[in-house]
Amino acid sequence: FTIHYSSIRHIINIMETDIASSYWTLFKNEYRKDGCNQQILDKGDRENDRIWEEDFWTESELQKAFDRLSNKNNGDDNVTSVRDAKVHVVQRFEREAALNWDKFYTRNSTNFFKDRHYLEEVFPELLMLAEKRKKFLVPCSPYLLLEIGCGVGNALLPLLERNRGNANFHAWGFDLSSVAIELMKKDKRFVKAELDGQARAAIWDVTANPCPLLLNMKEHPYVGADAALLLFCLSAVSPQKMEIAAKHIIETLKQGGTLLFRDYGRYDEAEMKLDTAKGKRLGEHFYAKQDGTRCYYFDLDDVKKLFCCDTNGESTSKKMEIVELKYIRRIYKNRGDNSVRRRVWVHGRFRKL
Image (cartoon, rainbow, N blue to C red; front, side, top):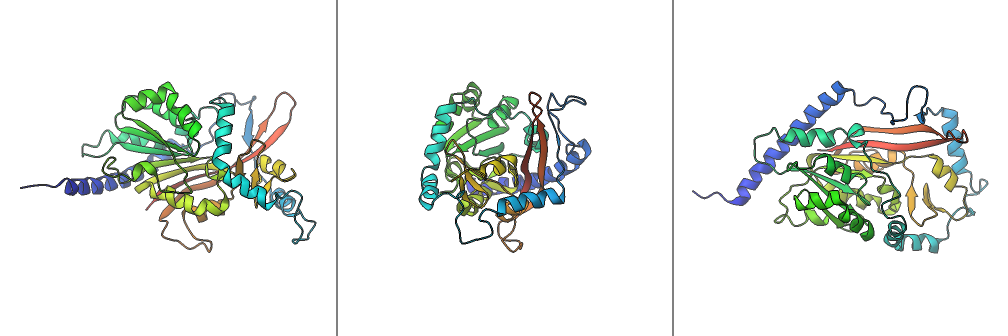
């Protein structure tokens, strides 16, 4: 009798979904057992020589920060603050978003951000799931990781290096900037992984269209990615376009897939400084930086509404559940002048139902 390829593919997809759910159960148990939620310290963060420490904000400090950002117009909501950019300036920043990122990477090349070697510590499922997938004997696609907003590969390249020669690990990188994508493609780690069939990269405006490499299901017979990295990317998107961006991101994941999120948090010191600059405020908690790029500062509800529920807190068809969602607040010390910086990020992990 004849077995059609589509029927086999359907059976494999079901098996992969079951595997993803099994991974999830396994990961939850091992994550708790290994204590991966404990504080992760930098190499220089020793008992008596710490470069950072956990920061615990009091209610009065949070209220003070809120009041400072709210009190821009001396109580008159009808008066435009000198901190607010003009409408045509806001529109220009939106229109030139890709151009400004191209300029950023042309100017800084691969020298601005450091490689993120800590990801397996804060997102241990990145490596655990790919390695455990080897033990399953059922036919299935390789573990597929996407990074959305990959830049020049500071997160993706260390992971490819860590999984060199592992045919069960595939990683695809996407970015708005064509300059960033070309720089990443020239890196020897990416070149080797691409030759081995482990890596791909493409330009993608996440606010405009669905994922380009997942559209052609004949060439790439994936039902979706096992995990997607979203690191300091969504903050560069206009708040008016975040909803559609989140929709496209969720669509990249298979059932049981995980979204791994980290971005700038509300009342971060950078936000407090930008808020005092003339003409830098493009919207609520949304600012233009000196280099022409933009940045939004999230609170937990912002992220929850984008991926899990609507503005009333009701569950929607987004079909993501929260695994972990929290602030990371730290004080960084400058040993040279004894100054301190209060940094805030939002850290989250979500599972597609």
